[in-house]
View 1: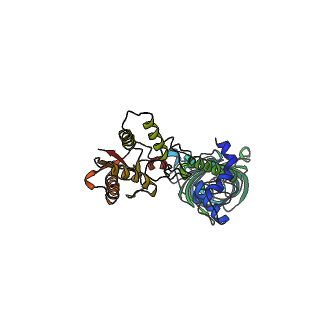
View 2: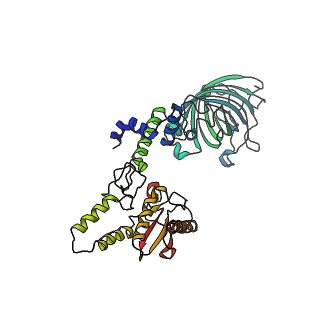
View 3: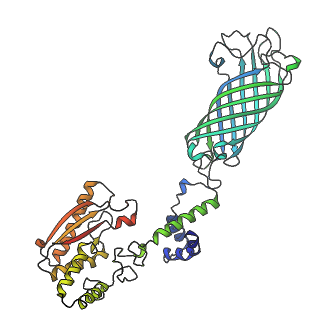
Length: 453
């Protein structure tokens, strides 16, 4: 069905738009039809790429150490903890999935107070250049992750180590050593606001050129080539730019995919507009009387044809005349009235209402006129007028609304000359016989129906 509709979209677009005055009106109408909400879908560069990050936590040298020196206390949980790491960095996302970052940190590495390690203290300053991968985007799980994020970063680093005290095995205080290597880490994050997030970071440095131990002494020759540093930190990330949200969490959609989705939505709307509830050949969006009787001729607005304006559709009059002709032994008035009563009692003749309105629609005037003509031609008959409402709104509200609808139809008939004593009203409240989520279905139950007494 949708493939065929693709061929007629240009024609239908012109039909549904009417006589548009300019391109601006066309775009507005198209946006309303498609239902795109611009503040919920961001395309291309419409998100902030830059962010500044600050963090603090703990750094521990893994190896090497001279005998008698170590960073952890085996008697404490996870070896103990001390704040000795401070850092600041900047990140730029090339795309929602990949980016670059640089990070400058200061580490004051020393033995834990109260531990059995000999005293030492080394200052470590480090600068990194890294690539960043947004894992949530990469694996396309942002809908489930919502405010959570997960970044991986890896690259190269250069650092300077400087002992700040002489130790039992060396007198290297004040000396400096440059070293370098690789760095890798993982950063879970949680968005607090559109451009502010809190994160934790676990980073491992591996120095491929290191001659100093982490206690400040020179290591043995066998350990001179490698060293490792473990950092755990907590921090805040601040995105900046002219957009409402950072790319880590922005709702990104490719332009081509957006156009395809919009076209699919538009086709769905057109299919809905082309529905024909009463099967009279006139689509619902053009049908002024969407309850016409099957087989009865209608005009271009879906209204049953009644050229003599007597309240009875011409097709029904032909059927009645034919029935009378083929049944010569039956009183014509009895046949006619019997058929009319069935037509009325079965709900084919009804008045319809707009949402939350108690006065019938203009299109219902013919049906009320039908009832009026019947009552005038049958002065011994009375009629029960029953009002209904759809499921939207509270029960109390709809009970009153259905009663008001019946009362207003009664008032119309009374003003047209029918004695109020022949008219009784019933407010039946909500009609739950249709899908309450369907606008077109709800139109059929916002009504007043009649029953001959």
